Image (tube, rainbow, N blue to C red; front, side):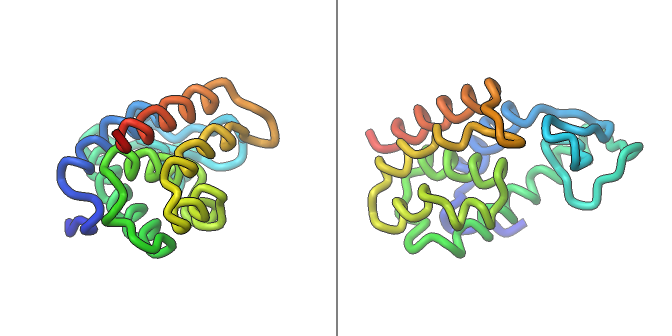
Amino acid sequence: MKLPKSLAAGALALAVTVIGSYEGLKTKAYIPIKGDVPTVCFGETRGVKLGDSYTITQCKEMFGKRLVEFSTNMNKCLKAPASIPDKSYVAFLSLAYNIGEPAFCASSVTAKINAGDIRGACERLPAFNKSGGRVVKGLVNRRADERKLCLEGLR
């Protein structure tokens, strides 16, 4: 598994810990909050059908590959991803993993990053607290944690 330059081994380890804790591990497919997309393992939705199940080892392997894939795709819409501090990068990767790369790339967070305003991008994270059009407490908490981690990266 080839890591993108901006996702060094230390940042990947942090991403696994941070994003994995937000997503949680479920080895059997389920329907999350939105109620429309079957999900399994650490938030995996691609090709998932209700009734699917995986081992913990399979979930961890899938998660690692997907984080690298998300990082690679996220980097395509960032002007200078390698210049973003690791903790801030992981906070942005967490957002991208949660809302999807297309939504991340079209977001105000990405616009601020590309304008060189990493702090402003960190401050935008709490705005992404809705699922199905309603504010979700778990997303409010996740975004607050991401914002904190993001700002720590700037110190």
